[in-house]
Image 1 (cartoon, rainbow over the protein chains, first blue to last red):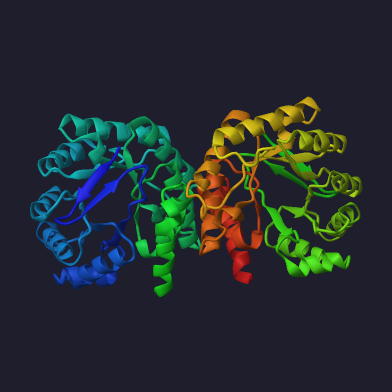
Image 2: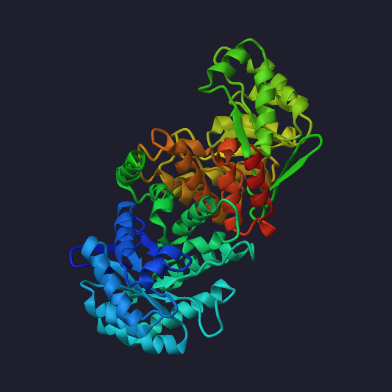
Length: 281
Length: 281
């Protein structure tokens, strides 16, 4: 199953036989004081800089999130999306929990966007999916619902199933629903990583859907986070993860090594090119 | 299925629900001029030093190989095994293609050794397995035969099946046969990594046997070998690899991260302890 997203000038295709697609996570003010302050002043310079830097570091799609308490996302999100479109060709993952902001950003977006996100709550499904359908976008479905994040892989699979069925019922094809299997920190529960890996395997086997994941949660509170993130990411890719949400500068080397290990890099071309790019710095 | 090996004072158990067991690869003269020269002079100081250093770096079992063209392994291998037993408690993996040398080393070994190796050739099966049985050892079975290393996972599985059946027919229980799924370099064939991963999955699913692998071959001729080895190793562990043959100093951090990702490290105890040991240096 392949998911295509695009900008005005570039297509990115996500699928099991293809190299892993990286969704750059850095245009997001959560935990970033400088970016938060800039957004509060309506200054999008940092957003443009992060966009350019992430594409240079190997991001294929850019997540754009401007959620700062007190700020008007309905105005700011389309401006940020516009700013990113001006500086890079990478397709955008429009990221907000505010449906009006998603809609405003989809109106200005040129291409087929990825929307981040819908989840298994009835309210979310009812409000987000029609907008995704209207703009012909693809959407990320989080495997959580009214009761929070299910503790088992089977329950997360059930939420994924519900999201895919609901999307199909409003006319969104299954290939345009990318399931986020969710990662919690192994610091709180040592089985958290395995639960996510099992969810990935089951969603892939049962639904055939493409899969995303915000990987860095896994290592919250642990030492040597970059190592743990990279190793977990490699295992998740082998299990069926197609398009993780990551800091490309930090994990791309490991992702290229995983793709090479899994036979998705003929002649090791991307691995060797990535190595040379890192050497140049 | 669990495989137990031991020294006079220490047991090591290999199994799917347990942390990955590292077999230290460094007592092997192949490609090591200094060690080759020392062995030619009958000097085992370096062997002792490597034994101590590897255990400090986290090796659980030590492979001991003294194969140098022209040297009498039947005399030297038991001496090297004796030297290692004197300085560390880790069980030994006795490594030779010379059956007489294996037998001589097994005679002096105290504990239940791992023998490296038998393969699918009739001559190998007929000469090695009776010795393994006689000394109550465990044995590594290489998935290759008269025709070399099979290019597909199914054919490697067939060789593994043959080894396990032959072992059982001479009275060696299945849990005492550890299958080496063999890794070839991705530099020559970009599907080589995936073939090994598929072999691991199939051998685990069909035979339930524990699995070993010499990982470093995978990256031969590639840049950034340590990264590629670590990432491939993590993927292989998630697929079912239990006891890789490695340079523990180079890959242990990634292996601890893989075990933590896979829920085999309650409370992240080993991961955090490993981090602290690396910080102390």
